[in-house]
Image 1 (cartoon, rainbow, N blue to C red):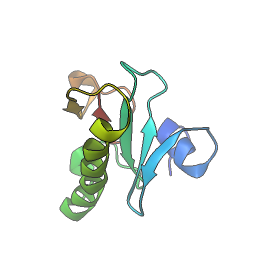
Image 2: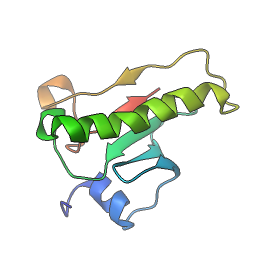
Image 3: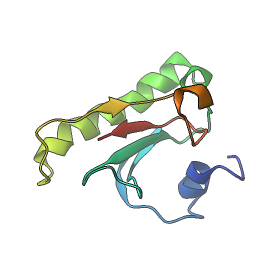
Length: 105
């Protein structure tokens, strides 16, 4: 855990969040700055700034939860005619929180 990382604070319980799903490798939470209703973030439990900082196995394990959430969105009761999955690495790409995370919008 990194002390100044907002996602690490959420994972440790220091900050509130609305958990959608979780497993031993990752947590899915509602984005507080939602682009639209149902905007979910999936974050690995292990702090890693960028996707390449995770091992292949760690990335695959996190993506399993991304996949589960993606399958659940159309069944959630929210209007969901489709969704966008995004993940950025580095400030030049627009990353603002330097803990790997996937957006399902």
